[in-house]
Image 1 (tube, rainbow, N blue to C red):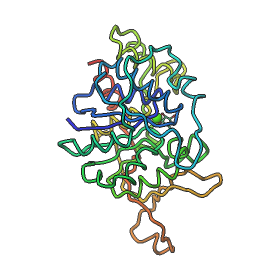
Image 2 (cartoon, rainbow, N blue to C red; image 1 turned 45 degrees about the vertical axis):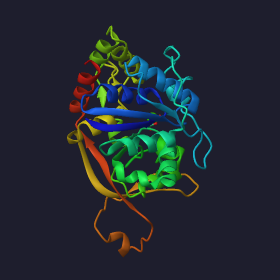
Image 3 (cartoon, helix red, strand yellow; image 1 turned 60 degrees about the horizontal axis):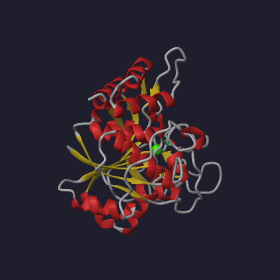
Length: 314
Ligand code: BDR
Ligand code: CA
């Protein structure tokens, strides 16, 4: 299986991503690191530990990371994810505590210790990842790829043009994009499209197995989706994990991407250059550092929903 590490802000859909990473046979979840985002970092740690216990993976190491973005202040998304950051489902408190090392230390240790290059899956603001890449650039040699949920080619969600994870810590996202590691951007354009149909969500909720039932509860919280008569739930961040387990379900184009860092209404926007003709930016006097990123432009929704259900009902 592919060694993976998830860096998350659990989070309803981060929890769906963790459940998939624990249960998919092609993935080996080596560690989980936590960062402030959907809720404060201590809430994220608690939610993450609880989800791993419910998923039957209480042994996966979990570390607490950055409690605020590099420059911005914390701006949670409790209006979306509930007061506890995970839908206020009344889940039990976790039985264990996080590792006694911080997220950057755990990331470095697990990446360098892995016998095969690791795929990192950040599903949260990129603060921990930026701190890791800047303080320990040696990790790059054992990173296969970074598949991150963040950014948008078209419309944003935190503001008209910016996606929440990049908007929350734009400098961190810029550091990631220019780190010289192969990167896949699983942005809002595909993120919003992968929806589990209502009947499947209902079946998951009725399961006697705690992890499967939790997936159903979380998906139900994300609904109703597009069709009011058949409310389903979006996979959200879990789609980025699908993209690692089954890259063939995603259509990507290698394009220049830059994060807008200037103050103002476009701060946090990912500017994706879809003109993509080599040399064009030079022709127009472009001199700034633009990273080439594999940007997800299309997704096979049925394929990823099937993959998700097969794994969590295993
Ligand atoms: C992202 O923001 C968070 O609220 C979700 O967990 C997801 O990672 C979507 O913009
Ligand atoms: Ca998230």
